[in-house]
Length: 572
Image 1 (cartoon, rainbow, N blue to C red):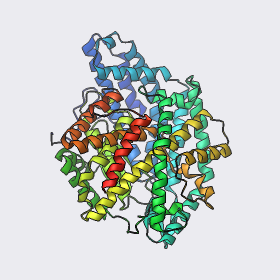
Image 2: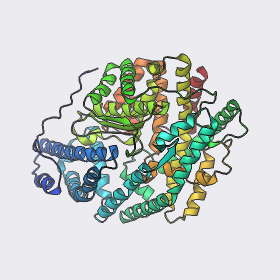
Image 3: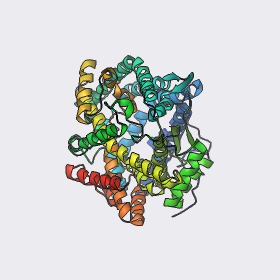
Image 4: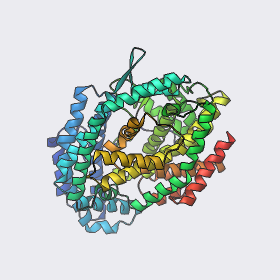
């Protein structure tokens, strides 16, 4: 595989080399030029699409850096303002012009002369954007974006005092792995009480977002925001019914396993009641796994692990390290969570996360590293749209990487017992993640099908859905008020609604990729990389097929994949 990864941005053809999209005044002439352009044949039509792609890539990368800087330091006023300026002053002015460009694309007689699948996908997406566009939704979307970033500010400001030291909730949460039960209980209570303090603030924010989103859907002539989002997200390859099938298959095939895992944990811990603070500790009483001591070591070990799979993969992370496209450690004032941000023009993405030193953090960098490899493999595709994959494909890249890298986790653990424990914890985590994905997704369907619900109805519905996908062993008595609000820690509900089921679909895909990889490592890796290289130049089922797997949510298929995971767990 090619080793050298260029970090140079390609020469610009359409916009000037000195162009910086820092105001609408400097951006507008380029859009005007595209609107006025004469298109006389297929070649000039393709060129025009490339020019538009170039302009959008430059603007998108500029917006990306604003977002990255803001999340790296939420206390920096200048970064906050630069991001807010883009969202409120630049993006709303781009939207109507993009709509006009979409119209120009759809109406072009040359559109039908290009029969490549990649372009068919593109035109289908553009047509969808054109059809749901409403001028009156522009200010609403700006308001939604401004409000949804409130979530990061509220969460980022949540701190607890432990042993005289102020900690972020992420930092404090590592104590839930302590073998001392009183430390775990104390930490759990501190974190939960701190979250509880802001429950009304978050409820209020969520209500505001629900009503704004519902309005956007109604303006675009949809019955509800769920139906609107299915169209807006370009979910051409599955329907809400497929999601319901996934919920049902998960409830029947996976949820019962949670009771087995919880009962096993309770008996190993030798406790009379399994409480929520007993869920992260190693049940055999071992100290928490420490796969790395600091973020420098985390980067070195990740490069070594990827290298063993394929030197190109190691090179991707090495390149990002060399150009300082990694910000990994947890610190006060940093936004919560983790992401890989694709940068459209240069093609070398940025990884952001909040690492302390846990196994979860190690898995996070492998996950985001999978996204990064995907970004780099697709960076030279002809148009920006070909590089922006739907989440069902993007998450396949990241979740598969978690699993196919497992054979080389000895880089992080030189002790055989710890290595087995790490793999076991991760596989159990996957079994636990699928029901959680179903919980959040089912909750969202209900929320937006019933936008006028009260907070009491929401709480009751949340608990009912949570019951369907949880073990019945964990004892929540005395903690019910915290359980009522567990959903509030899920960033996706606030910031990226309906973006969550993809994790479920992609997790199933990743298990299938791993199964192929276990049967034949070379063919498995080749299939995985072949699927990634396609970007969004084919449909989701076709991309899954390139990886030699199925895009399928039937109970039978889910049962088969989970049996494979359990068999692998049995070997440990």
